[in-house]
Length: 143
Image 1: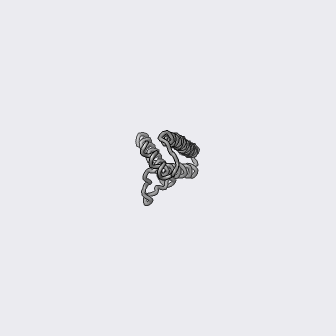
Image 2: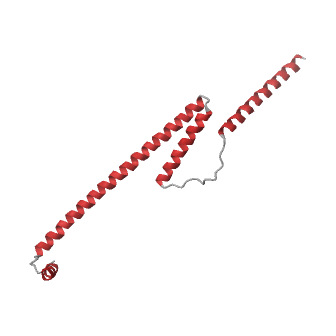
Image 3: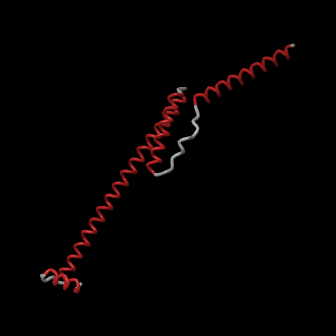
């Protein structure tokens, strides 16, 4: 520190003591510590905000899934599909925000309404075949 004080005194033409150099470095350490502390507080605030945003988005996704479930229970498949689509978009957005990979854009889309119609048609067909086979069994027993 004494070397620094001598060099500064020579270059500035003013008497700079060793204690002045110590005070200077000490004050800079305090300023640096304060800046780091503020920076850490800022980082914590940013992280808290991001966590809050993620939690809100998860709440929205869960609400959309409940809406889809209720709509399906009521037989409103269109509303169920719309709610599921919105939930999927919100989930993709959340994944993107978190830096997760998104699914390829050329994925196959499945038309849920067509599948539901096919299931209903298959169910009706199955019931008809059971009904007709039971009717045929009853006729052969009566003969």
